[in-house]
Image (cartoon, rainbow, N blue to C red; front, side, top):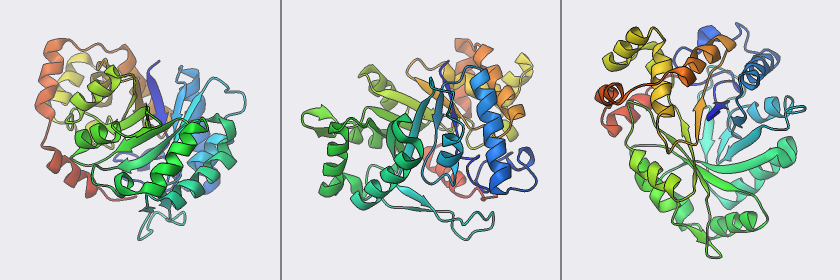
Length: 306
């Protein structure tokens, strides 16, 4: 199955996903969120999902995942470094995460991830890289990454913002000892923000593993879908989330399509996408849901944490 599970909304009490609050425990204690994460992980595994994606900034996501991994030896685990969680397990924290792409942050967070995940960490990604980010000019950081790759750690990066395509192409041009430094990329692609598609197709064709994130636009496509998505959902008698995910699954360059379900109910609704086949006419109709990248990312930035 090409679906994977992302833990962004399950590892911490607050996140920006729309439609999340009512699906989570009323008391978002560490214990309650751990149990919720394990329920979704169990259901995802039972459904055939074998890729789970976390990050150092996802609160206790790596910890929750580490406590579940025993007996699930066929699951691929990816995580990310670069953001630190500073929310103090509060939904009303003034700030939830702080970004820093530096050699010191990489070393420190890699040690933290390995302490929890050990040799189960299959892919370590730069979190939310941009084409003008400091990584490209940071010799010590690039040297650290090159050494980690030489030592056998598979490296990738995730992208953010309206210039994702430029970021993908620039990052995939980085080399260490004559070989590509990053062999995986994780980007936001959905029917509202498909601007990175050509760059991801190129990456896939060159043998890079492509992960697709935010396929439901942080829940907006499930809760308040644009008319083309809503119309197809009604026609197929499925939820709008299934339509949006089916569109992502239809992309031949998408190796792993991540879902961010926070409950078993949400997961089962999302999984309908795996049996929904959209024809070329329907996929063309969904193209009408796209908005300018600058507008999309401005609206995403305005989503409240809760």
